[in-house]
Image 1 (cartoon, helix red, strand yellow):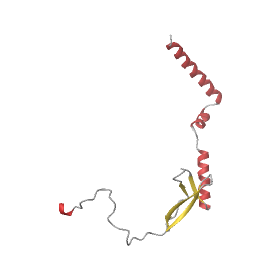
Image 2 (cartoon, one colour; image 1 turned 90 degrees about the vertical axis):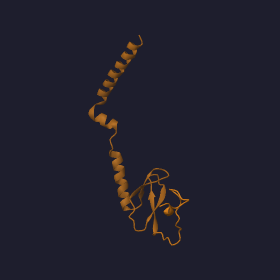
Image 3 (cartoon, one colour; image 1 turned 30 degrees about the vertical axis):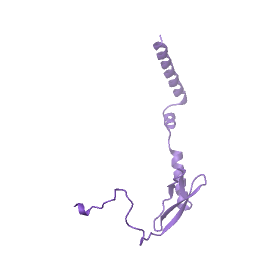
Length: 120
């Protein structure tokens, strides 16, 4: 068994195979545009269908293809962001502003009473 092991190698070591005879598949550069107008390029296999949106690794912004599918995806993305409800939106749906101000005043009075009672 010991005669079959490779001596002098370790896990994660570089490959013993050279690059001779290795043929890379054809590639193509696909350009994406962010909302700020920044363009960035991503390499894909020539046969692969590029996704309509891609996150830029440098800025973290979402970029879209500069074609019809990309414009459609950008519109859907913007609508989705605009339609997301925040906790404030949900609170306003349940209570009026006057009710919220009344509740706030009640809670503040309760806190003030606790502070005043604990300091004696």
